[in-house]
Length: 336
Ligand code: TYM
Image 1 (cartoon, protein in one colour):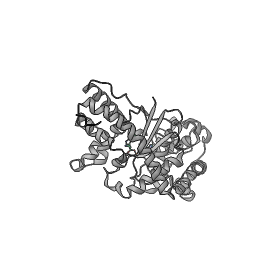
Image 2: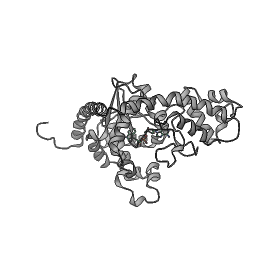
Image 3: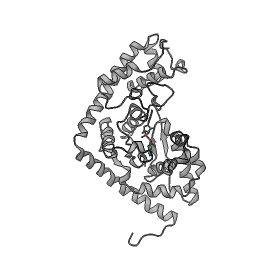
Image 4: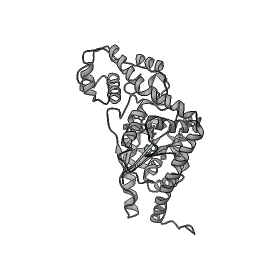
């Protein structure tokens, strides 16, 4: 049974990193997999207070972005994490076996907690444990993510082994991270060493999927580059992070290798390349943004889609939860 689980925090408009790093891989895989679960992880958003403004609207917006990006509702189930309480139940069970030392090593916790580690909330520290529960409650086998989530997926694999050993039963199979293509780590348009992210204060650092054509053109025009011509191999871009990032974005959108794109533009300067990149972005991003706007007109329909997804996910999660409660040794409630 090949089952995909992919999660996205509802933090506002999705950006090109989310789309190229993960959503597009879910779209591509959905016909080869037996089951596809695409989840808006609203409970994860609660771990960072700045993200919880307009959670309701942003949850619908994520659902709309999946459909507009090509998630096919006859192949995939879209739902909100908080609609399936089994995620948090399993997360608690995992919390009782996961060593704090493992969580202390998580780079994302260190980055997000910053200097004020003692004041960081427990939820932020336990974030990867909830992620493990998200995936394992469905016994998912494939997890499409961007490079930044690799360490979390490795931790989830460690928790899988730990649980199976601790309770002496192979309840969970190891989930595989799916991190592929030239766009597993899209960088900021203003700083090629920082990840493209929703939390960057400058909107010019990212391409949002709902940006209009003028905004897309302006952002690419303002994107940081250098004065050198483009080389004919991607390897030569090793110390030119901004240039490498734009080449990777082009390659991902055009379904080419970065090497091929370098050969196409070898010897040319950024003015020519940026014009072609803008055209490519407009061709890919604009129709998705327009479809999102259309879908967001009918909130009732989006809520229905999320509800159907949650019903499907809950039924599967509850079957697994029954087995897990038994393996852990909890008393069965009467009548179950
Ligand atoms: P989130 O909401 O930050 O991002 C959603 C997905 O987008 C990918 N991504 C990127 N890929 C390439 N370049 C970028 N600049 C970039 N920025 C984001 C992320 O890697 C992710 O795949 N913790 C997760 C959500 C989550 C999850 C899960 C994912 C919760 N439970 C279970 C998979 C399985 C997160 O914060 O992603």
